[in-house]
Each structure stands twice: as C-alpha cells, then as structure tokens.
Length: 183
Figure 1: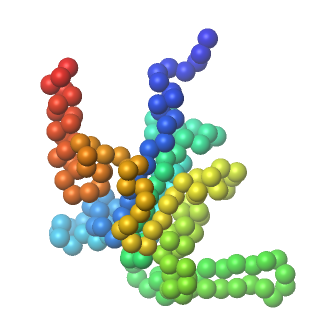
Figure 2: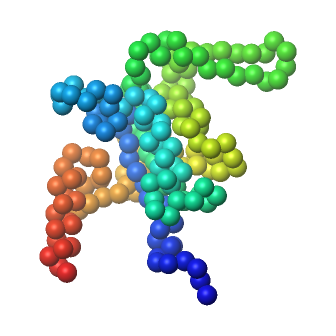
Figure 3: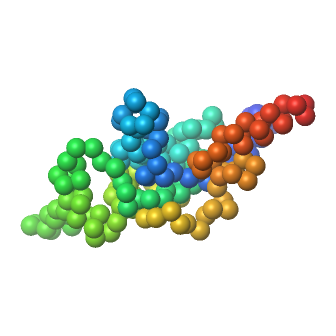
C-alpha cells in the first residue's frame, strides 16, 4: 500500500517562475516607505528568494533529500542593485591549489567581464546547500541581461497574463472568482 496522500505527481511537477532584477518589489526591497521610494531587490535578497525556489522550499512537499524545486527565469541582470559600496569593494577569490595562484577580482570588474548573470549565479550558488544536487539546481536558473528570453511560453499565467507582469493580480482574482461561482 502506498504511503503517499494526494496527487504527488502533480506536486513534484516543475513550474517556471519569472523574476526581474530591476523591477521594484515591495517584499524584497530594503526601503519600505514611502511606496514611491521602493527600490529593486538587492543582490542578497534576490539571490535568497531564487535559492528558495530552486530548492523547492516554497512547496508543502519540500524534503531536503529530494529535488522538488522549480525553474527560475531572471531578466535584467545587467541592472543588479547593490547597497553601499559593495559593487566596488566586494572581492571574489579563486585558487587552483598551487602556491602563489590566488586570484582576486572585484564585483564591478566581474560584471564588466561576464555580466550581472555571473554575479547572480555566484550569489545563488553560495546560498544553495553544498551537495550533489547543487549543480542540477543551478542549471534550472536561466539568467538574461535584458528583458528578452525564449521561455515566455513556459511561465505561470492567469488568463493569458504572465505572473509578475502588470495587471496579473486582477486576472488571478477574476479566474479565482470564476472558479468559486462555478462550484
């Protein structure tokens, strides 16, 4: 006899989420009031939200040993927002275990050389658990420097409006209202 309750196949299905690195977000912003002063999410807050989605911690079936996370499409990585002087002072290190081979690079040079996608990938990678699922989870994060991406058809939609675009909340309320009147 099975020990699972409910439609587990549906629970383990992967969903595509869209996150914009440049759009102001009230829940992820460091400035809370007044509403017009809300900033885009800072690099750390954005990376922690993406890591949560990649691990699947937002789902009720989350288990640390299973890979039940979703896909994340991140756009506008060229406009990553950092607080203070981190863009010029944060240093990334790499070493190939040979004596004298420690290499350093600052965030602004890394962004000029590889783009904001690499900076975000490094931040999310540091927030994921260090186990054999890490590379698979990182492969589900798709980053783009601008608005254009080939995954528009895969994103969650309510009534033809993708989640995160202006007006999607009204469409979601209309769809939910139609479902309650049908029952």
